[in-house]
Image (tube, rainbow over all chains, first blue to last red):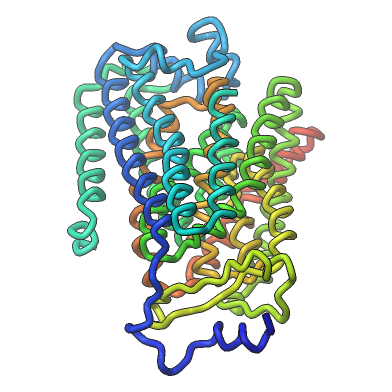
Length: 151
Length: 335
């Protein structure tokens, strides 16, 4: 690779125009679309959870207490001890998915989780397109992120 | 705007659903309020959070900085909300605009998927380490830890502002003098269609190995401070690795989502991410992220830089003063 050949590639040529639009890699499109639509779904769940939190009394933790405690500047441990007696150490929202807090937290978690299926979809296509190195990197990313979910 | 709402029906749906939701919450709320916060104040905080988040998301997507770099310093500098709560919500703010803008950026070919997955691994590992250290520090150092965080973050923001000032407009289409051997070996040569110039721009990322090391540091800082890391991802991609500014901003958004996804789980399982506060910020980020992603493709790359620089300088001053106040007991009347 010489700097001259790269310069030729970097600079626009007079002949380029609409006919030379680059093809968008399918792996990227698949990654983006999976994440996009799961995030949209997660946002809808969060909106519904917010409504349930505010307009019903079906909550794992009283939102009156939560909002006041946060605004007062209490730390995380103090807030949880005051609410349910102890700070959680796990996916606390899973057993409470029928409550307002649980639905809202579950929606946020769903959005955060969307990265993993997105990466897996992209990795599959990268391998299929012969981009093995980047397919392996994508799989590694998915594995490391999954460790963060369960650890 | 009307054209955008017609072209992106899911955006219209989310906006309408959000308006209806907040109206229902206002009319039928079971929140009775407390001595600290009245019922209407509680609703007001939720709606104000959403609107502020929307604004931050549009600005952040355009600047490729993920939103956390605006949210977290402002909240740490100007409110009494616990620092761990602010940082966890900051990661939500940093992440969701990046998540939702991934789709449009990838479809337009602005974000390079191979570059993203190369950079993702050091960022993820760094981010996970950063969030674990943040939680450990909060559990063991209390208010002293909070003051240290504020002080350090103020310094980081000054550094970021200087980087943006010195970066300048010459970096929109960087031209490396020489391509190193590692970069040649990986051969992530690419090109994208620049709508604002109506032409194809070719590029090849350079200094790949150095970029990887810097991304670990960026990931750690993002996970620790709840900034997300986009503030540094763009300069690393653009100034160090010679990636065009718009591709850097777009790839940054995608990378933020991946890196922050790993960083945020420790906060979730420890209960440091409280949904009632995080929810309006998430919703604002998603809607603002979609808006910003569609605007980015059409504008010149360096437009938002000046707004970000002013915000960074103002919040860094406040953070430095609060950090010094907390650590040394010196009262500094600033902002």
